[in-house]
Length: 215
Image 1 (cartoon, helix red, strand yellow):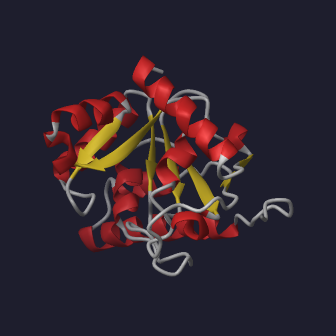
Image 2 (cartoon, rainbow, N blue to C red):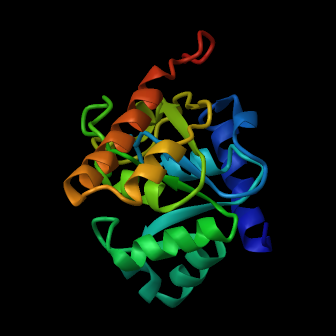
Image 3 (spheres, rainbow, N blue to C red):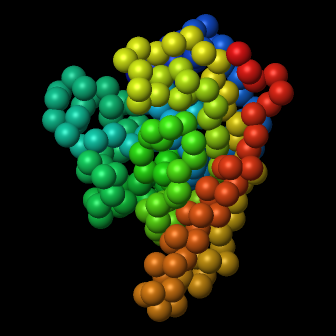
């Protein structure tokens, strides 16, 4: 970790521990090194640093490219391994940047739902993460966060001190679909992207809250 990342990582760990009473389960399922995609549900602005600070390795994040136009903010985002993407989180440049981070052996957190939930429930997965998975060779670790919607959902102006929990699932390997995607017809390819996204979301849904994770 670089100095700036380590400082931010330490501050977020302290905040989640002291204010939100964070619990972490099965973090050892995430490889300590090498490329990995962390696929998490998305309930709050708290989610990215919550997942990232739960791991002992640095993680890459997505941030709107417009934020990088501000010198100080841009410097902080870059030092925290943020990847600039357009407003919808897609685009060829954003995909290339994500794949470059993975090719360099980095980990990155992505949200299959594409945006924060409005009611606290899991949303259908979008095909974008399927495209990223197929274009890469990285394993996918499903992640589910609990409590962040109640702590700081869309409907709230300030975060409340509710317990938050992070659970990591078993790594997923899409080698068979990646091989098929190299030669299949375009209609099938689009179906593969959505299939991968749906399979990841199904694994996220299987992660249940721990009996000791409630407030």
